[in-house]
Length: 388
Image: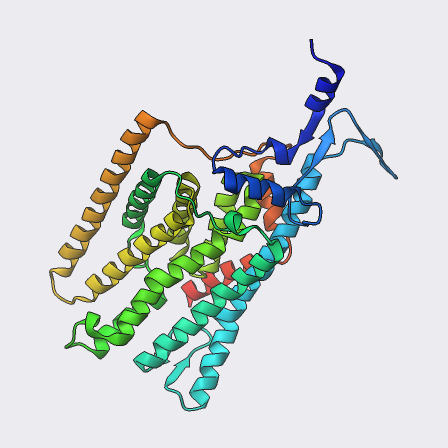
């Protein structure tokens, strides 16, 4: 027979204690739980109530203390911060970056741009330098803002412990399959295609790998950008969203990344790759997996861009053979991971269940100002760019 004390304990609902912490390691779980439980933390979802208690509110009478209301209040706070971060990203990329380039052009530096296009004109060194500076600013500034506002413990903000290396292999395999599925001529960004085409035409008689600017840009775009981009989307932003379940965090971080691409042709590919990156990070336990997925994606697009510069009749055959080989490697990697998981058991994602449906939670996030406005502008700009 249960005692009265046991009955009262069982009637208390705590979202912090009820979260499934089994998917990560003890160090991560301890830090995450402590961050959520901190009463001075305005972004931690820590609702607790006795299911038999009601609260008196003027004008409404005695009402249940709703988990859904508390949940939406925290989601609104979190997405307000993310909205500001997204606004910083857009302003740097679409306004401040172009103003900087225009100012440099006015001062005599061989670089210029058009406010209604992503194309940068000028010399190779000047173009690469401008791209490096603008890209770093547009990612690091909003990432720092989210980091400062959320104030997550380092080991929670950045998942750093590889719990399951097999999931890294699986994520790379899945990334290769996604790359193959979306690798149409428009699959890679106009900016990437233009910069590689620029170097090819400028040094037609020299191998692109011998061009200093090309090598610098390639390393920066493939490695550095992949790491800092994942640290932004799958760092503090992802951890704060994870309080409402891994599926919610996966969907919202991926949609945010896709819309911030501001290119209709890129949105499907960025969305799918972001889902794979986040999923792989959760299953493996390390941000390294997410960064590896982005590196694979960028290397795949780089290979396609270089192959399609070849004007010979063999280009289509070589490109299609490359795509087929990438798809085959991805399939084999996934099969190996599947067979190993069949013997050892599968890892899982943390699920959060509340009075709200997942779709209601997502709609609540999208309605938060200024997140809704910034994402709407990104989508509108993407459509305008596609039409013009």
